Image (cartoon, rainbow over all chains, first blue to last red; front, side, top):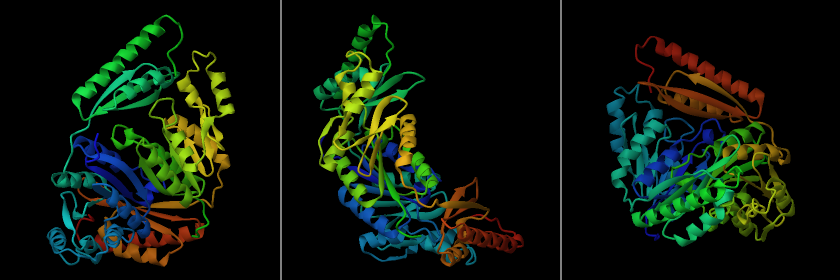
Length: 255
Length: 255
């Protein structure tokens, strides 16, 4: 694998995730989405609703990866500080974006409904372009290589689909999973040898705990379908050979 | 709130999380656990099974927070590189720890069972102390302010309970949740004023999307029970006042 493949980071913004009150499902969703279009998610960070922490993380991540996706903190309340923090990170002011104001005006017809708090949701760092929100209208935005999305999962997922045409994907990472009835300790040495012999693939080993024994899921990943098939065949051969070896010894196959 | 409260970061290590294949539940579990014992979780990072990325993250986090908890990468296979990366981060060699070897020998009785791969799980950075693993025996470890745990959730959870006596908790953060039938846009200005008037609390606002409307969960957090009660009462008053105001206007309470 070369280093020219597009890479990405996810930045989850929100005290509620760090307190354990809310489980973050957005980063897992984005991970699957990016894998599907050939972009390597290389890092996830979760930071609190604190401006300096958001600024620091955005600047670290946008310098290092092709794309950065943030979730959370773009609503109308006092704890929604993401737009201002992104403005600080890019060194630009944050202003009411005329198109965003128009979208909100279309949705909230009277001045009584379009409160100052709601109008805050039209504040975008200067230079940013809008990301449509088909669910509840208040848009996300893109500035540079950073995409800023809502934290509510349904809204985030819809925004991500609207962002997709702007992303340059790479060659999609292919993967195959082989169920292995043995624990990692049984196969580790043989599997390590296979990994060494198949450097054009990445082989991961994920133990699953049953009632009394372990089994393992072996995941082979590669962008080259032939390399993938070769490594998968080697793993299946290895499992069959261990099965034959174990058949006679009367011991459980446990970890 | 003062800055002398203990803080923490979680470092999740694993390609399988970043590819979207596996959803990380460990960081959410640790978040709830730490909140319960008065330790502020301030950051979560997820990094791939790459030594330099683990080293960099461990060193950044251990310098900044009171405690760091890592999950993943301590099994017997070739992709389990956490112990070596932690050794690099601390600048110490990684060696077979005699107590860890003894634990494994007790569990895997014959040399045939105690393979070289399994013995790898007894390799601990020099200076580290063991964290017991009641589930599958191979221990985690602590070095400095870093606790290194398994990635399998049942094992991680058991290790965390064994770590608890070593942690110095702070005054526990208390929290109260008030269900608000209005969307954020309706209450944002009033809520912002309450947040400004109650600086000894942290007030978060979390929208929930129904079929056609939004409602909001308002979460007040404080380490001072009286401050918490005052802010909660102010929020309830505010919701009642908005309810009375809305009662006559015939419009839906939606976002």
